[in-house]
Length: 117
Length: 110
Image (tube, rainbow over all chains, first blue to last red):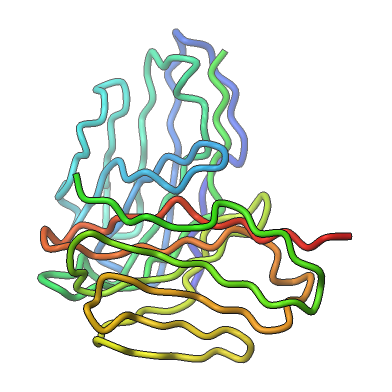
């Protein structure tokens, strides 16, 4: 199974709402990622988890809160978002983080299309 | 910060014509990956290049990594409608971060 699943596919939320995005993979991958992608732009890295520990936080505002409950699951908790946070949120996983010059291919989920009103 | 420049932003081709996208980095990369994102879809890994001067082929797709490991290209021969999408390069820099290019959108003229 080489699939990364994400729920929900679409989400509309108000600026005062609290919601969560979910991501799951069953490939035994030890690195998981959250990306934000605006239209006509490349994916922008937000967070990286390695062996269930937060490894990288790309200076993301605290209204985004990641959580990795176990090696297969990754959540992104959203609170008090702004309209400019509307975007496609992509989850990805890879075999490992890739130390030094080594990289591993990333498997992306289909994404959650988020609209903040 | 370090950037990977990718050109062109868009390329319009007739079906059957060739397509090429280029990525350039100001510094040496450890490796470079290529992804394809179909309209409305998510990025899908195509290939990784690691060695200086490396050339890899996947059917009609040819990937190259420059001798100095600062540039890379993707060439598609005889494009088909299934090739439509945005092609991204992503290079690993000396800080071991993956730096994404802006992408090149392949559009097939009707």
